[in-house]
Length: 61
Image (cartoon, rainbow, N blue to C red; front, top):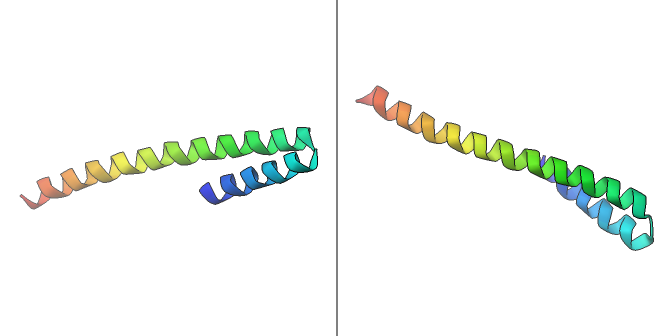
């Protein structure tokens, strides 16, 4: 997902430099949404990993 966010950000930069403002804004919007989803999923997985480590320690004791 981060890969696609970076691709859309690059598309936004290129199209903005070429003068296609509407297309650049659309690509930038998609990049923002994808990056937000990436951050949300990363936080969820980090929290789940931390909880999983605690559960594994309890199971071993």
